[in-house]
Length: 435
Image (cartoon, rainbow, N blue to C red; front, side):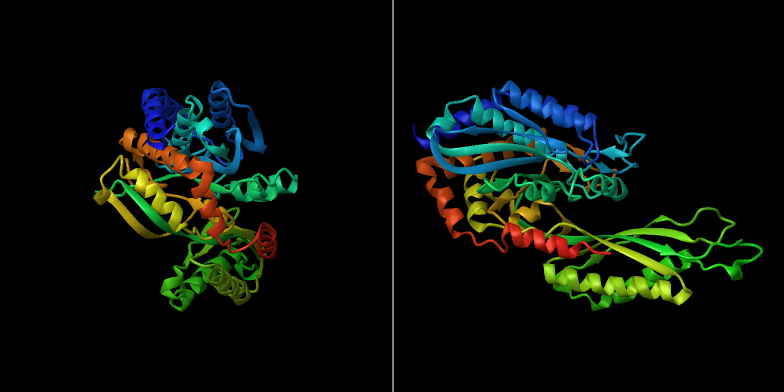
């Protein structure tokens, strides 16, 4: 069968099923869950994949699920990903009262897009005309939140890493994946899509300042104020900002998660969390050393102690130009060329960045939403553009990759030079993990 006919067929099927795809998107939006707690979303996606006749593996990283379709012809495996978890934004009108969780991250949109691709490829004869396989992966815990909860999971040996894709890499779930792709929603103004965006990596930090409690009114001189140590440390971090090179895109944004126990007791236990973000691994490690210095100096100034725990965060997001161009070639069948933005420099972070160091990856951004990510203003405005258009573009790109004995996929895989092996990746994460 000709490739153009395969593409038309898969797009037709996605179009025919779009109302049920929209309904799945809404169900996930209405029931937001935080990372490593995504029971509803996992079960819903698993049921949908099973209804397509696929064998589904559930809870493959505490939560999450996956299913694979395969051609009779041996070839590369392409993974299509969607993320299960929500973010915390209590100010959002749709946030859950108890948890503050809401899909102001657009992960519900990713899952709907992934499911649309699955429907397009499994309910047609398309896969039989390709070489290789496609794996649909609903992945947990992309948002790096609730660090205490995830720390407890790690202590119970239920997880090794706080980030979902880190955990999946560690567990070997990507060992047989040759290429990976997913989309992300973003308010792009007048544009409809963005290709070739880059993102920061980061190290996560938990900090505990330890002072000496005393009565704040009658004997403050007998205490050591851990809150003062934290405030000085934040000022010290601010004093470092002019030493961060502009091209490194360093971002440090601490919050105090515990400021004391009682107003009339000199604070002796003060907690802080922060990320140290940057564009390259070396710049992140350098900035992290400066932040440690600032934290230690704040404690030393008032005679307090400080405990610093470094947690492996995410790696910078890289691009694969060959995959990007192939995707654009398909995308222009659905939206005008002049509505596609090329390249953007994000200071935020994605755990998909970790994968981009190991295998060829595709991570375009799509409009159809309004408001900034993770804020009370984020909302879905155009379901067709946000969900159906990227699904059609991804499905047709997969056809290109795996058609003709997967010659295009094999070429991209052959030309790809990973920045590190899986073993080197895990070794780096072990070195970052430090107290």
